[in-house]
Amino acid sequence: MSKRYLLGLDVGSSSVKASLVDAATGVVAADAHYPESEAPITAVKAGWAEQDPQMWWDNAKRSLADIMKRTGATADDVVAIGISYQMHGLVCVDKDKNVLRPSIIWCDSRAVGYGEKAFNELGADRCLGHLLNSPGNFTLAKLAWVKDNEPELYSKIYKVMLPGDYIAMKLTGDITTTIEGLSEGIAWDFKDKKTAKFLLDYFGFDESLLPDVVPTFSVQGRVTAAAAEELGLKEGTPVSYRAGDQPNNAVSLNVFNPGEIASTAGTSGVVYGVLGDVNYDPKSRVNTFAHVNYTTDTNRLGVLLCINGTGILNAWVHRNVVPDLSYPEMNDLAATVPIGADGVTVIPFGNGAERVLENKEVNCSIHGLNFNKHNRAHIVRAAQEGIVFSFCYGMEIMKAMGMDIRKIHAGHANMFLSPLFCDTLASVSGATIELYDTDGAAGAAKAAGMGCGLYKDNDEAFGTLKKLAVVEPDAKNRDKYLEAYERWKKLLKVAEQA
Image (cartoon, rainbow, N blue to C red; front, side):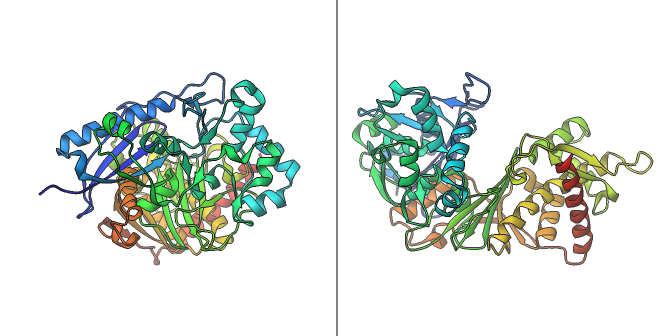
């Protein structure tokens, strides 16, 4: 008897990952990503970052072919497809659905001035009250740059899309998006609960440039005959879910309800929490978007905190302070030092300007180092504590917005492999941490099962999630953790004023 599989595609800027998930058991049968080394990003000028959308499609094909071959799955076995994708990118196509220029991706900063000008001229109250964010460097600001700098090309644009919308178009032939997608492009009005026409009008965009909106969990389209032949899939297979990578990471961890938190801590770190009421940070230190289960009747907002200086600091310490140790040995070394690292404090922001600090660039600094008392173990521990403290600093902003943070869901990867990191985060935040074995492609696959009606709800879809560990706050030593955190906050203020 053949199995039924759900296919997840995770379109990142470094690679495209595909996962086949057994629909009955929730187990990942196979996954693969291409390219195996990092995909190229073109930077014609400093601060620019572009990729060819065709490259994403080609890498999706390679990843899919790999997992189909390894599992022996047939086209008939794949019952639904879900898509996760790098957020905030811009893809422009003409009436024949041909891509007009390389995609301006999330880390391209050329449009910052366009967003700032819109924010200043439209006013903070109007932008934050309706969009919950500044237009910033998001998709519509990127389109404003194209309109101003490439007018001939702009005149040929039929539709603008996000990277996930492009992959869905290649699969189904339909050009659509979601409310979550519109919100991450800053094209959704949360007060009027419709497309943000006032911002489109400000930039001089016709509303017809935006794709039609489909529900996040729904049959958004079906695989065309041409795509089926190209990919080795069955014509008519439903594409039944898509979301940006951070909302999708939350989905992968079964984070759907107010107060639930999803976190990652790779090179940079993310804390993504669900809010049940429309709110925003007046200083825009965190971003607020529609979560995957937001509707015009139900407020479910994703509050996104991003810290640039996280795993990259830990890797720097590994490379420069303890190059002779493995990461597990490095974690063991850090654990030999008391909570608070005997007075050593590390401010971790050495990877550029930080949004949580209102875009200040304070760099990384080490404080309290005594040559007669401290050694490399203190630096290793202080670095990990400093990363945790940056997370907790941002979480204070989220709490001020009305978020009750009691539980943090995370994949058992990167910084969350460190017991010290987990213990410190749980104890300072007061939240229980649950660690799971999952990733974005697998999450998108299971979410597609919800979208096509195979699962009745998220609890059924993600009930098979494998929980690897639970980390509770250390009530006995919490005062010591909080004392170190308060010292860190005082030193951060000094760093910000320098």
